[in-house]
Image 1 (spheres, rainbow, N blue to C red):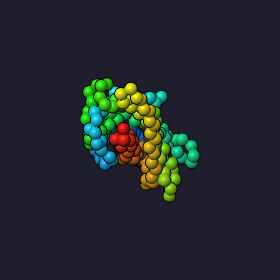
Image 2 (tube, rainbow, N blue to C red; image 1 turned 120 degrees about the vertical axis):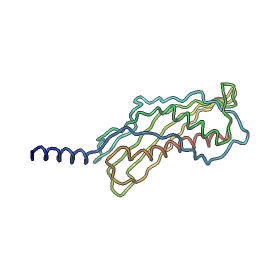
Image 3 (cartoon, rainbow, N blue to C red; image 1 turned 90 degrees about the vertical axis):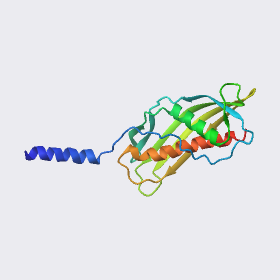
Image 4 (spheres, one colour; image 1 turned 90 degrees about the horizontal axis):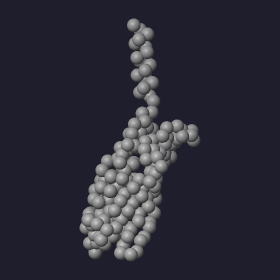
Length: 187
């Protein structure tokens, strides 16, 4: 009986101390667009949002002693989240929702990279992230391609769960949408 108790105690101890690598979720766009607004009330049609990354589930990794130890992953539909977020931010920036390719601006977005890196540093910025987007805007016969690479870094307390990285991913996600919409107000 004692040996069963000791085995259970060891399993609980080891299970509680190991890194819990769960899917990282992305909440809906937090409606906080505070950038410039469209003065002309142009209509914008979001033609497509495509996740063109080779591995759509992988969103980064954990670095321990300079080596990648754990891959971070997500089951989110980033295409839908970005489209919903862009639609919301465009509305807040004063744009009208376009319904077809005859809108004032037609937008296509390619998600090229989503990467979070959590290092085992104690007193320095130990969480870094970057999202890379390609935005193609058609304005009449003119086509403009712009690349966005918003990045951020910060210190977080030692983490034993990938779920601790969700707020940072949400900030990066919102910042990238705000960057795109803010730039669009200049067209």
